[in-house]
Length: 270
Length: 253
Ligand SMILES: Nc1ncnc2c1ncn2[C@@H]1O[C@H](COP(=O)(O)OP(=O)(O)O)[C@@H](O)[C@H]1O
Ligand SMILES: [Mg+2]
Image 1 (cartoon, chains in turn brown, yellow):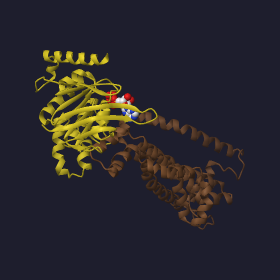
Image 2 (image 1 turned 90 degrees about the vertical axis):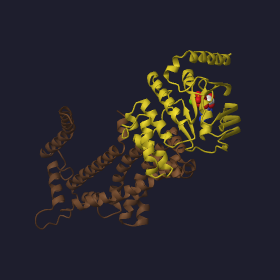
Image 3 (image 1 turned 45 degrees about the vertical axis):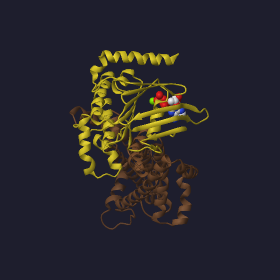
């Protein structure tokens, strides 16, 4: 990296930080001068303090039920997202490739997907609890379902839009159906697949929070609702920020993988 | 002499609300090892004819045979070079070239040496690792040619392979194809709407006319081989070109 580009990167970071820092400063200022409703909106300073206890625990004996549980709850939620999301990819991508490639598969499966899709994952909650109880799999079911739709829809689109001549070239060189799907349709559809993956990941985080608020007794979503019930708005806000952070980091991870997998695409657009 | 490709009264109608008769009663016979050019205006059915031989399109009427057998689907015995090269953009030059042998289930020892030789033949020995997007149009088409030569096909079907290239690159590629063909002597159907290109490359030119697509005349090219780009400025060449242009004008009336 050349020096000017480092400088540009630094300038970008500074510009990006101006707004959040200003907001937090204003929030703190309003709080310290008593403009915020006490007990409803804690100051950033209080939130940071609560977060510290939540993350590292309070020294000595404490009755605080959140003391030192941040990491384990973060891991619970992240694991559920990881499992549900992986399942959604394993089902959604092959299915999308198939629907996009085969007219029969499309006519067989696509209408059902389109009919089920308008049912929001939140509406699946009672059904999921009735079926799986207050267990992990209820959450994973919702995550998988929520992430599945954008993944399958975008993969289908990508598989449908594959250049006809690429297919012809592969057939001419002796590729069978399986090889055509794996070696041509799937890689050609990958840019669309990643669009679906990013949308799906956002929905996966929404789903895990909703599921944990209602259907499981651990994770960031569970803490969020529980803390609200006992009036710990400082923990609520710390929790919200944690969710945002995880959503952001996991999205960056997908973008990173995308950059690795789609080098040819990046070069193409320059 | 063996017949490589035989079309007997072949029709092609594209179905639909307004069916298009792309080809009408095509009779054509191309000998083994012959370089045939299909020459004609855009829309006269050149690609359609080629696609039927390739197995991409079905025949609506008449009989089509390749080395005595019917054509039911595409296959590596009938290699196709597309106008826009149609390389897999996510594969390197090398991976593109070995795609055919690989999907046919050959072991690396069976094709790697040949792939290296073929890439050298088309002048890309130093570009194995490049992605298609990093290549110029002419280089892409070299890969398009290499990936079919490596399969050692009986037939080479080329649909305006140099049509998208600039004039200078096109000349280079024509010279390359002349050299390659001189060595390998494959049976070729070469589609073009460039008269010079057809004369320079082909043993026999089929002039086609449109609406519906028909073979208007068959003209053997009696220019001696080996040919090269100097052939283009040859007196024989110009006489020949005059004849063909008259033939094509005749069609316009
Ligand atoms: N898939 C198709 N469906 C309908 N009509 C087609 C199709 N492909 C080609 N045609 C029509 O058939 C005729 C011949 O087309 P084509 O073989 O592409 O001609 P050329 O290659 O000589 O330009 C044209 O009128 C074209 O519009
Ligand atoms: Mg054409």
